[in-house]
Length: 567
Image 1 (cartoon, rainbow, N blue to C red):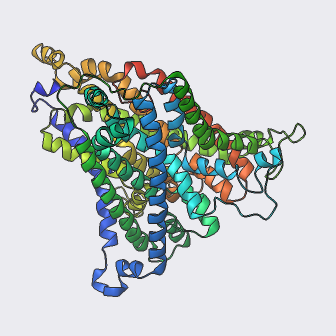
Image 2 (cartoon, rainbow, N blue to C red; image 1 turned 180 degrees about the vertical axis):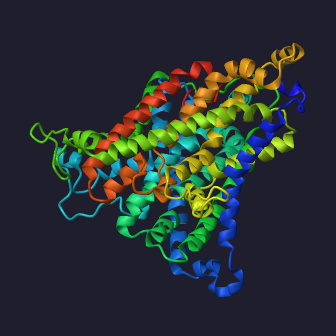
Image 3 (cartoon, rainbow, N blue to C red; image 1 turned 90 degrees about the vertical axis):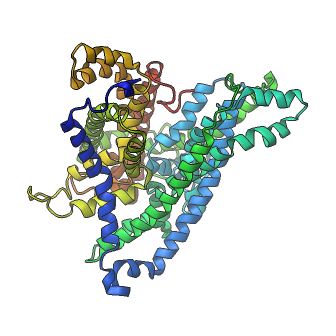
């Protein structure tokens, strides 16, 4: 193993530089947020903390956040458990494509998800108008409600439940299930007495991560809640920032800390139960195949799974495409109304589109390249550290990704709103603040594939090079880098895929001239240009699907689990 090489055989300047970057990107923003939220406590009830806590809007938004997040978590559990059990414990065919399609909603930006569903329902739906099924004009949009928000968040976060629960299911020992079957246990008893007890911790961990994700989701509550004046904590923060005022930063810092505390509880629950779910059983001889379905039942299950995917994925995307091909909302798609004018307008005439595209590609590409360059030496150094120190650093790196993006955005505003010491320049209102926020948020995504790959390398290769006189940097670049290059590229692609459509952080940090694709879709829909928003959203979905397919093609050269939708 690589850890056999002396931990002292490391360039000290490299260790100091990487640790300083981790502190700057992961720890400093959170500490700055906490200091601002707890400031002016000497003023008593006039302090920001007490002022926000006695505001009824805070508690209304908190209740709305908990209600929609809990309901969304239940929906995610139902969908995620259905697909995890069906694809992990049965002999259903087409497993890889089912997983790929089920993972797609998680990779599609939340604002695009919300827009596609808005085009599917309501009196202005081009799809329903094309089919002659649209409700009468003036009918309410059913998705402008708490339940509509919860439904879409539940669908978007169901893949997180799938991934977490599947990790427990695929490790079930076949011997226990087979022994229960030999002893005459029915399928119901196998589920209740064998499968559920062993996967209970994984189920709780999955529920916790789905809850935290729903709690910090901004795109869906913003597009479905703001028109109905239904505010959750992230959208309440957005409204506060839009209103300006002398105390706005202190107030939103308190609100952000409130979200952060709730999310932190969920993260701690998730981590605790993930550790419990990582059991090892004596005699484990392979992956469990609990239920060998006959041809008829297998086809019925496959049809049911594809039907669910058709309802939650295909139908909204079809509605989105149709909406982009009509001249206006409420117009049905016919040979006479078919037009590509929205695409022509957005891609050739609107300067904001090219600017947003350039900004997103620059930020996502720059973040991916920077984090690839950082994750290689970081993973290499972490393998040589003491387990306790390695766990501490990994936890610091995961903080910005685990907490809701709105918390990180407010922390970055507080940290960079004033000119930087010595340099006398301010990052606020520039692309630079978005770049720093992206680095902090997505560092964990870039690091994990490289860590997994580097941990599987044979340490004798480096030991031989060290005996031959090769220094640490030479070994890193000439031995470790070529061997972990596929995982390094996969981590970079995952960062690019996630960052290019990011909204939660960008919605609070963007400024005029610094729009991103996620912000563009949100602003177009908020401004009433839903047809143009649909056109750019279709382009985004095609780009996301293409990147996911590219990652899938790389899967054969990567450690298992690096690409989540590969089985």
